[in-house]
Each structure stands twice: as C-alpha cells, then as structure tokens.
Image 1 (cartoon, rainbow, N blue to C red):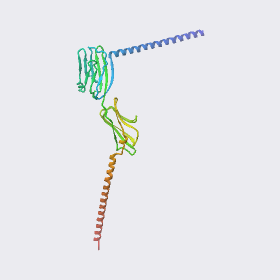
Image 2 (image 1 turned 90 degrees about the vertical axis):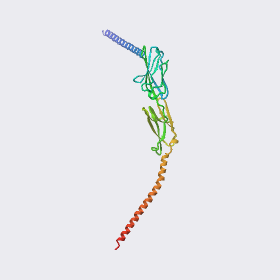
Image 3 (image 1 turned 30 degrees about the vertical axis):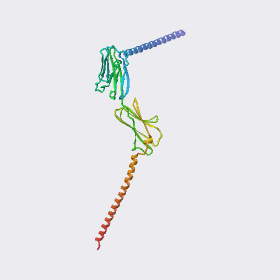
Length: 298
C-alpha cells in the first residue's frame, strides 16, 4: 500500500507539474501574441498618420531647406507648410489645381522675401534666416491619408571674437588679473582653457547679453591660455599673450609718478606757509609782550 500510494502520489505530483508548465506556456504564448498585435497596431497607426520629425540648426544669415523626402505626391493631395503653435500657413500646394503659393506676410512679415518653394519636391527654403525664424515648422499632406512631418529649427547668431583685457585694479605683485568678455550674445558658453584643459566657464540662454570671465595667471608664466565662446554650431577663440598683456600697468605707474611729482612741491609749499605762519605768530606775540611791559613801567 505504501509503495503503491507513493507511486500514485508521485504520479499526481508529476501530472500537476505538467499542468502548471502547460499553463505557463499558454500564458507566454498569449502575451507574445498580444505584444505582436500591439506592434502591428502601432505600425498601422504610424502608416496612417505618418508623423516624422527633424531637428535643424543653422547660423543667422544662412539659408535652410526643409526637405520633405516624399517619394510620391498625388495630384489631388493638398499640401500645407505651417509655422508655430498657431499654425500660420506659409505655403499651399495642390499639384492637380496648379497651386504653388507662399504666404510670406504672416505672422508679422518676418518671412517677407525669404520663402522659396520647390514645385517638384515641395521642400521649403528660408533664405537669409534670422533668430526670429526659430521655431516649429510642419508639413501636412491631406489626401487618402494624413501625413505630416515636423521640423524644429534653431537659429544661432554669429559669434563675436572674445576680447581679453588686463584688470589693473585687481592685479597683485605675484598675479596678473585678466578678463575675457563678449557683448550682445545669447545661447552661448564662454570658457577659459589652459592648454586643452577647461579652467572655468559661464553659460547663458538669454539673448543680447554681455558676458565676462576673470582669470589670474602668474607673471612670466609659460603656459598657453585661450578664451573660447561657442554655441552648438561654431566657436570663436582668442589666445592669450602673457608677455604682452601681463606687464606693469602704465596707468598705475603714471599715477605714482604724478603723485611723487606733485607731492614734492606741495609739501615744500606747505612747509613754507607753515614757517611763515609760525614766524608771524611769534612776532605778534613778542610785540604784544613788549607793549605790555612798556605800559606796566612805574
């Protein structure tokens, strides 16, 4: 009985394990099918809506072309180029109706004489671009299916060359104080480098602001220093010439010379005036004393 019972118990245990394994496999297959259906749904939705996006960075004054990369355009499709959150219409195309129109007076005339439309690829070109044209652009194709493509355009102003000057008011006997500065900049980083090593930096995201970054170096130092301003597109560099800038400040030397030259005659004049006053007081006192003695004679 015990042996038979053990055999039956072992068989039950085995069948229970088989059932659990079958259930796990069924759940796994179900999850896999659901995942595949989800992927298929996303692909169908993607193909129906056709949403794509590009990020474009350009320097102020250059031209930028927003490429559609369309492989097929139907004659009855209506194609629109929009700008900004309010979707100002910049261009409208309908090949079947022969419509190729740009609207460069919206929203405030910033696009006037700057828009060019390619009649074959319907790509949009913005010429002589400025920072006012930074923003979101969208291509919409209304037809059998709605297709759109978004562009995020960032326009950066051209960078000035950093200016390195000597700060005589802060210079000491052992160190030379310098200042690197730029004016009317935005979305930039200003940095000091010692060779290829970054020493300090300051960043700003505002427009039309002035930046300055101080640095102290030892006199007659032989290391190489440079001040760099950069944005995501380009940079400008000014190299430091220590032997030229880190010399005794002429203004301080001249001020000290003038102080010495002026102090000597002024001190002499003061001494003379003081002597005259003392002599006059002494003489007056003697005179008064003599008159008093004369009046008191019996």
